[in-house]
Every structure is written in C-alpha cells, then in structure tokens.
Image 1 (tube, rainbow, N blue to C red):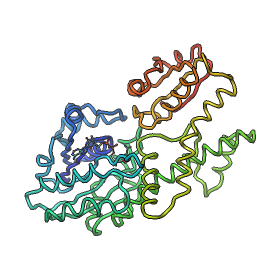
Image 2: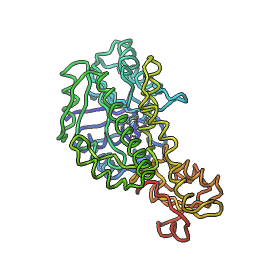
Image 3: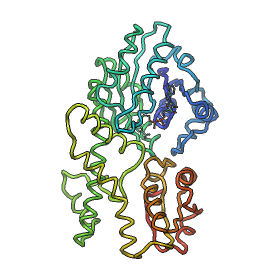
Image 4: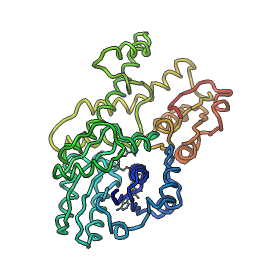
Length: 386
Ligand SMILES: NC(=O)c1ccc[n+]([C@@H]2O[C@H](COP(=O)([O-])OP(=O)(O)OC[C@H]3O[C@@H](n4cnc5c(N)ncnc54)[C@H](O)[C@@H]3O)[C@@H](O)[C@H]2O)c1
C-alpha cells in the first residue's frame, strides 16, 4: 500500500485518485479551484462520469482519499506525486504548460522534509516537456526526486473502469526501478506494460490519440465516398473488418470528433512539429476534414428537405459523445449554430449535457425526451449517443 499525492482533481486526477483509493492506496488530492475542491470533498464530482460519485463517496468515507487545498498539506508520508493538471491549447494550437510549471513550483516550495519521492507527470504533454519544464524546477530546489511520466488512456464515459483496470500501462522514467515502482501502484492492471524513457511515454500518448483521430477522419471520409458511389458504408465496414490487418473499431463515421483530447492533442502535435521544422500533412488534413465534416449532416438534411427556413430539426446527443456531460468541442455546437443561421428551429435532447449545452447555444430549445424532440420534427441529426 502506498501513499500518493494527486495534484489537480479534474476528470483525470479525480478518477485516477478514486481508482487508486479503491485499490487500497492512501490518496491525498490537491485542487486549487475552491468550488471544485469543496464539491469533491462533499462527495460530488464536478463532472459526470459513470461510477465516480459512488467510488468517491466510498473513498472519502473510508478515509482512503482526502482533499486539500495546497500541496504543503498533501506531502507528508506521500512517496509519489502525480501531476494531473490541464495542458490546454493556446490560441495558436500549441500546448500550454503554465499549469504544469506552476504545479511543479508549488511542489518544489512545499517539499521541505528531504523525503525521497517519485514525481509522475500524468497530464498529456508533448515529448520533452517533463525534462524541460518539471526537471529544472525540482533540480533547482535540490530535491531528492526521480521523475516518471505515466500517460492516461482513460475514455470519458468509461473512465473509472479504465482507471481501475487499465488495458495497458505506459511508464517512462529516469530509471527502470522508478518505472517499476509506478507500475506496481496499478495493483489490478491485467494488460501489458511498456516501461520506457520519459520522452517515449509522452510520445505514445500523442501517437495513440493521433492514430484514433486518423481512424475517425478516415471513416468519415470513407462514408462520404460511399454515399457518393451509392454503396452502404456499413457493408464496406464489415468487409474492411474481415482483413486481419484492419481493426474495425473506431472506424465509425459521423459528424467528426470533438472532446477535450483529440482536437487539442492533434493540434498540439501539428503545432509542435512545425516549431521543430517538421511537417505532419496527414494530421493537418485530419484537422481540416474534421472542421467541415459536420456540414455533411446539414447538407443531407437540405438534400431531403430543401430550404431549412422554418423547419423544425431535432438535434439528438449534445455532448461530444455518449455517457458524458462534456460539451468541449462537441460538433453539436457548430451544427446548431449553422442550422439556426439557416432559419431552422432547433430542438435538442441529451440526458446529461443539456444544461451545459444551453449555456453555449441558448437558442436551442431543450426537451425532456427523445419522443418530445422528435414530435413534429421535419428532420433529425443524431449527433452523438447518450
Ligand atoms: N479528460 C480526459 O478524458 C483526459 C484523458 C487522458 C488525458 N487527459 C489529460 O490529462 C490532463 C488533465 O486533464 P483533465 O481533463 O483532468 O483537466 P482539467 O483541466 O479539467 O483538470 C485539471 C485540474 O487541475 C487543477 N489545477 C491546476 N493547477 C493546479 C495546481 N497548481 N494545484 C492544484 N490543482 C491545480 C484545475 O483547477 C483543474 O481542476 C490534461 O493534460 C489532459 O490532456 C485528459
């Protein structure tokens, strides 16, 4: 059993924290945002994620998880410090490392007891970031640390299950013993583990998200082509999956990808490549295609209905995907705005994300059920499941 500190209780930090707590570790969670911290301390996750509320309440009751305001209160017996702060995109698409830098600085000033600790970067960061941002801060403070990088592969909607029983673990570290210590925290992991260096671990996360984004964009393009040729994508998809070299999962077409990870991570790797004089034309094309794919849904409505002015359109699924209330980069926003600009009356349904969506596009009338949304609708866009 280990004691570990988690800095940042967003979807990643909190889910990882409750999963470690459920496995018997003692977790000290640090959250800088007062509202979020108080909510979590009361057993209310600030986002919807299946099973997390229950696991959080259990962890708090059993005192396996404690929520505190500053890192000073969260070090004590802790042997591991996970940095799970955000790495959002800057306006030019590059990765913002300011939260990571600030978290590392707070850690360095709080770490006064001379205890040896492993500092684990959990955030998604471009290759080289852990060495460039975190290491100099800890070295400058002459701390007895070892560094590790352990990317998170959880899928929103299945995050707790993924954190409890990850299907693979990637740990990059300063040395093999450090990597093994981090891996050993995942007591119920069944899948394979890659123990490697820091930069490779950082890169694996971008490689994974980039590849999945390529698959989605390819499926979207292929579905557009199938329509143009008058063949069924579903049948083609079935045929594709017969080839043992092609995994048919994630080759599901739609209105493009959204969410807090794929768009941000693909933009960051493209921008990072450009800064280094490299190019990433495939990923650039993926981003460009993803920007316009949602228009296919609107064009299809127009092909059926003609002018959309005065037409009632039901937009079903408002989050970026099912089983979440996360509307970051959801395609439902540009779809709704385009329909409204064409004079359509848009009604929406989503059991989890409606409130968040309404704040962004208040002109969409939210209804309480699929049936209500479909009643009297001239057309429907199934944007996401729920
Ligand atoms: N959301 C996902 O599904 C997902 C999946 C895999 C990886 N990731 C990556 O994991 C990282 C975290 O993602 P997230 O969605 O949880 O981010 P988030 O921004 O929603 O949450 C981060 C939390 O850290 C807190 N924080 C920031 N600085 C702090 C500090 N100095 N001390 C204490 N708390 C601090 C913030 O207030 C916030 O609550 C990102 O790099 C993201 O790209 C996210």
